[in-house]
Length: 151
Length: 81
Image (cartoon, rainbow over all chains, first blue to last red; front, side):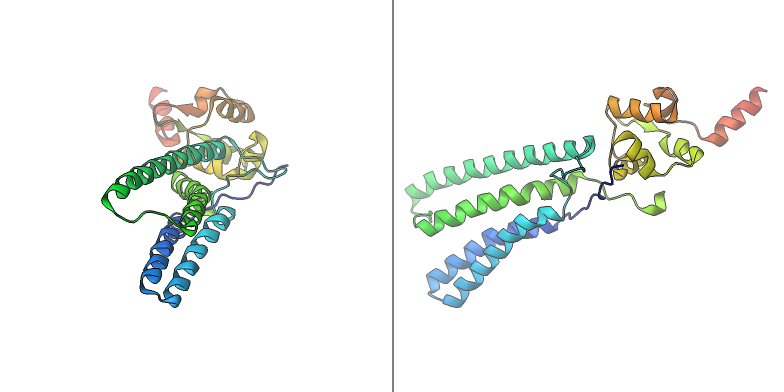
């Protein structure tokens, strides 16, 4: 007998983790412009809280990874493939928009990532998005759990 | 397209829990709950497995049209007799 765990929904929590990453980068850049170390530290704290939350939240969201003796059933596989396909599309769109912005920003004199640390945080944000976005989408794709009252 | 089903009715009649049915057809118990609630349409394979579990034809369990309730069916039978 396979004893599968009940699916869990997080709904908006992954969105908070994802939003914390760009917010942290903005705060860090404000701190760099002002020369305020405390603001830079606050930005870094916000960024890494979002980054590590995005990685860890998948453990508490809808099941996306099969476990030994606990494979994903057809509905869970459908949720997983849809969530990854949609998040892949969104991340690709964001990368295209980012590249387009940088092409225009270079001509207009707007901010562009120039330092190593900017690229590092951009890379980490993409990774955080890759971890957290499927959990966010899967949380919305999955209906609310059926309660025992409906038994 | 919504697919209506009578899984809960058959399960209740058999005294089978969601977990027992889920284990028999190799899915998560929540998937059975979503099926009964109409939140998820099963694959043909899962529909056939559930029909085989209850030993009925698949069209007795799943339909594109809403099933009539037991009360309505009994009244119809009474009227016919």
